[in-house]
Image (cartoon, rainbow, N blue to C red; front, side, top):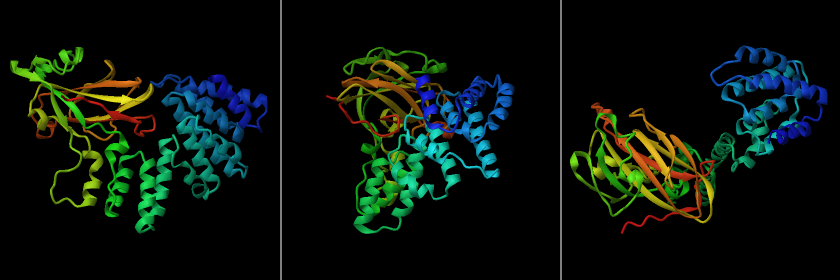
Length: 392
C-alpha cells in the first residue's frame, strides 16, 4: 500500500526531480513521526519549516502523506500545504492545478487530503465550485458531498412545481447529513411528496426488548446478563427487584405524535424522531437499570457495515455476537450518528443486540433512556438490507 501511494506521487508530481522528491519524502517522514500525544512536536516543527521551503513541488507529496498520518501529523501536513500555497501565491508562482485536480479525482486518496486539494483549487480559481461541485454529489468524501449538496440546494431554491420536486428527490438520494436531509424532506413535504427518511438512512425501528435488569451501584454496564450471553426470545429472566422479564415486541416511533403538526414541521423533525426507541415508554421508567434491544437484518451478501447510533446513556452494541462498540457515559447529550461501530454482515440473517444502561442521576435532564440506530456504508448511506425480525 505504501509503495502504491509513493508511485502515485511520482506520477502526479511530474515537475519534481527524483532527488527533490526523495528529500521531500525524508522531511515528511520526520513530520509523520510525531505521536498522537505530541511527542516529537519540536522535530516536526523544524521539519515543517524545511518542507515549506520545497515550494509547490511538495504539495502533492504532502497531500499524499496525509493518507496514513496520525491526527497530530495531519495537522502539521495541512498547515504545510496552506503555508506553501500562501508563499507561492505571494511570490507570483504557479500552483500545480492539473496535479491537484488529478489528486482530487482519485477517490482512493485520503478524504481530508482531497478536501484540502479542492480548497487549494478554489484559491487558484474562484469558479472551481461551479465547475466541480455538480460532479461531487455522490462523492465518498462527506465534506465534498456536503458542499456539492449545499450548492445544488441553492440552485434548487429557484425551482417550483414538478421541477422542484424532481430536483429535491434527486438530492435526497445522495444526502448524508441530518440537517440537509431535514431541509430536503421539509421542502418535499411542502411539495406534496412523502419522503421516507427511515428507508433513506437505514434506520431500524422493529425490535424485541427485554428489561429492566438490575444496575444498582453501577454494576449494569459490566455485567453480562442472560440476553448478552444468548438471545432466546422465548426465555423468561429474573430482572430488577426479582421481577419477571420477557422479550416484548416494540416498533419505534416514525414521526412526531402531534395530531395537528404541519407537513413541513413533521418532515423537519423526522430524522431525530424516526426510529427513536424510548425505553421509558416501552418498559416504564427505571433508574439503575439495564435494557436489551434485539433485531435481525438480512443481507444478500457479506459486506462491511457501520452501525451508527445515538444514545444518551451507556451503551454496548453487538453484531452476530461480537461487540462492535462500548461506551459508558451518561447524559452527556445525544445526536444523530453520535457513535459508529464497524463490523461485517454475513450473507443472510444478522443479529444486532443493543445494551442500554440507565444510571441513578436524579436531575430532571437525566431521566431520558433511549437510543436510535441505523445500518449504513462508510459514507453514511443506507445498505441494501432489510429488517427480518420475527416477533411471533
